[in-house]
Image (cartoon, rainbow, N blue to C red; front, top):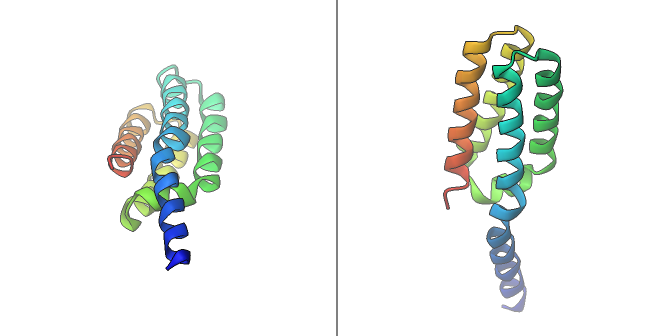
Length: 111
């Protein structure tokens, strides 16, 4: 019983802090990436996309705690598509896929 109480307490603490520890960083990185795509600064956008992907990979466990399995897998897939679109220097489709990323993050952190 004591073991379960500790696990529940840790989960509550992590869930309470997740919005603070993950959402703001995602929003900031996405806003920076969006500016680079709008300016068509593709070299910077590639670097920012790599940074966003690394951040996601490093914080995947937090995303898994607050989101459903389908949501974080869809987010990873959207990152892959966005990376290709940036490499192709496709401004319109990059912006559309970035909106998909934003929507998925909104769903994940809507708890």
